[in-house]
Structures are given as structure tokens and as C-alpha cells.
Image (cartoon, rainbow over all chains, first blue to last red; front, side):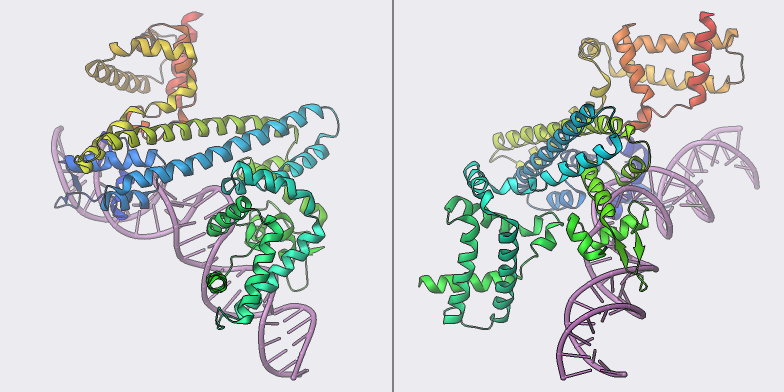
Length: 249
Length: 249
DNA sequence: CCTTGACTCTGACGCTACGTGAGAGTCGAT
DNA sequence: ATCGACTCTCACGTAGCGTCAGAGTCAAGG
């Protein structure tokens, strides 16, 4: 039976941490003394060590709480997902380091000449070039190469036209949500949808699959994409799916 | 001349972000309309792009603000420091991933047997083993190997004794701060200090240098070390330094 | 002129995981 | 009783915005 301070020392945390964990329900003390002091026992220490271990692996307290309260079989899955998240973070770190290297190289080259102005230009350019890194995880080697090969077709004018067509199409679908998915109107909308998708993918299966994965994960896109590609009403997706299914039947 | 929304779109940020940057003084609008609307111009866009670029490299807003307002020559230094920070983060990520791999392997081995109990043991053990990773950055290859070679000498009883001796010595030094560093008393304290240091380092120069670097960076240690190795009053360091200098003279 | 929808602004609370300080009670030794 | 060390709760703070409420602005249409 330990009081807060000695208990905290055993696991290498602070008393404040124990207060916090108590408050969020992650680790409650076994008992309280008459004066209100928190009293912990050995099984509490075991749980705290588990918390510390999972935290080290990058899981958040809310996640840890669920895991320790739920079916332990989910632990394996949580660790797998977490590893994937850590891999992504590592990739971002490496890119940032690489970007620093580039900026440093440019700085060295520009030594002695209007550094202030040159630095600003260099930094700006680097940032723009790296704005698509977040898409990497949705692509396979094949689909990435194919998208790269079609990149030159994608002029600013074309982008603007397609973007406008998407907006209009989505608006029209929203206005037609009450239609029968098998109706002529729904079928026409579905056909236009498919055409717009294919305008980007070139009809390629790999690229189509990658784009599909990307859009299924729309909630996790960087927030700056919200203006360029707003979240689409789930009812719209549902309607188009049903319209495309009705076409096949 | 742009209003907030169109300006935000140009740089891929949100209006809320612009509000925030205005509020913290990172990026102020050039003007305000009669109605209070923020109005930005092209040089503001250039600055915002720089902000975005530096943010991508992991610098905090406060750092970015200082850099953009100060001597641009400091940018190179800031980027160098930042790269070091990112390397450290990467190392921690890799260790966490490695720890997940180990936990997953143990889970696979223990399949079908009391998973709940086994999982908790495995997780606890892994966390304890990795608690010294943060020290890595202070060591060279040589010093790390030498510390490792002496590890077996470091029994729990010895650790406890040394820890107590450090506490007592520090307390005595604090009580002697008013003494002349050249006095017999000060010299005795300095000698004891040196002996305790050498008890850990074995008198090795590499290890001594590593430990010195580590303690100079005491402010950046993990917070759980605060109980095992409390921050030492700077006056104590100063006194010991002066006492050791007085001995040499 | 009024209405309407889209836009802008400020103020304030929220998120994650604690750190810190204030103020008050508890405990054990003197 | 006093004192020093300890415990507790409450509440504000950190970084970088997101979100919501409420109010004002703007331009187009009736």
C-alpha cells in the first residue's frame, strides 16, 4: 500500500501525473485514507507500468484506457496500427530533414549575396514542392509512376475546369438525392461522375484504386486540402454507389 | 490586395490560422477595411509562404517569428539545430517501432495462453529496458562502450549508497556556499565531489566528458528523472567549479 | 428600402497531457 | 502548539489552431 509520492517514484512518473490519470479514469487509486490521500497497491503499479509502456509506444491516454479496459486481443491490432502511424511520422521527419538539407545547401551556395532575399525565395519554393507528400501513402509504386506520367496533361486551366465540374456535379447530386438510383437522371449523374474520375485516372485500375483509397480516408487529409477538395456529403457517395450498382443490375 | 479567405486559399491555410497569426504577431495584415476586414498584399503572401515552409521543417511559431524578425544569418543555425532535434525524434520513433515489434513477437509466441496476463508482463518489461534511451545523445561510441563494460559493477546496493552520498554532499555544499572556495572545507568538498564522479566514470576522460555534457543539459532531461537525480542548485555547481579552480592555482 | 445568403470579425471554450502556483488540510517530530 | 514536509483540489498555462455563438458587412434580388 503506497501513498502517491512513493508510488510515483516506483514507476518514474510525477504525483501530478497520478492526479491526472485518476481524474481521467485511467488509473484510480485502490483506496483513499481518511484524510483523502490516495493509496495504491501492487496491482496498481502493474497497471501503471503498462500505461507507461504503451505511452512509450506512442499511444494516447484515451487509447490506452480503452485497451486496458477492453478485450486484450485488440492490443495486437492497436500495436499494428500504431506501428503504421509511427512509420508515417518517420517518413514526415525524414522529409523535413531532407528539406532542411536542401535549404542549408542553398544557403551555403548563396553565401555572401543578398541572403535575406535569397533565403525567402528558397524556403518558399521548397514548401510548395513538398505539398503532395501526404498523398504518398495511398499510392503503390505503379500508380505513383502512372500519375507522374500523366502530370504534364494537367494544366492550370484544365484543373480549374475539372474542379468546377466536380463542384457542379456534386451540387446536382445533392439536389437529386431523392431520385431513384435506377432512374435516367441518376444514371446520367453516375456516368458524369465516372467520366470525371477517369479524366484523372486515365481509366487505369491501379490509379483508380489508389484514388479510391485516398477518398475513403478523406477524414485524415491535411486540413489545408479542405478548400481545394471539400469533404463530400456521405449521402452523395451513397447515392452514386447505388446508382452505379443499379446500372450493373 | 486580398481578403482573408482568398489569401488563406492561396497559401493553403485556414482563415482561423490567419486570425491566430495576426493575434500572436506572426503575420499582421497590411491594412483593415472600414468594416474591420483584414486586407493582405503580395509581400504578406511571401511571408506566409516562408512561415509555412519553416513550419513544415518543424519549427514552432515562436521560433519562426524570431527568425523572420531577426538576423537572417541565424536561419542556418536554427535549421542545423532543428535537424538535430528531428534526428532525435526519429531515433525515438525507431525505438518505439522496435519496441512494438518485440511486443508483437511476444504476442505471437504466447498465442492461446493466458494472453491478458502475459501481455501485461511483456509490456512492463519492455518499458523498463528502454528507459535509458534518452542518455544516448550524450555519449560517443567509446564512452557508451566503456559505461556498458562497467555496468556489472553497479549493483543496486552500490547505487543506493552512491545516491545517498550525492544527496548528502550536495546538501553540505549548499550549507557551505558562504565559504571561501580555497578554504580547507571547500577543498574537502570538491575532493569528495570528484571522487563520486570518478566512482561512476572510472576516471575515464571520454566518460567524464559525456557525463559532463549530460549534466550541462540537465534542463532537457526527461521529467521522470527529476526524482532520481534532482536538478542541482546552480550555486552548487558554481561553488564546486570555483573550489576546483582554487585547487589548481 | 428590405430581405437573404454568404462572408467577416471577435470572444471564448475545447483538444492532449500534464506543469505550476495558490490555498488549505494532514502528519509526525519537537 | 509549532514546524517542516507532505497531500489534496482548484485553476490557469502551454502550442496551434478548431469550433461555435453572436453580431456586423456586403452584394444581389425583389
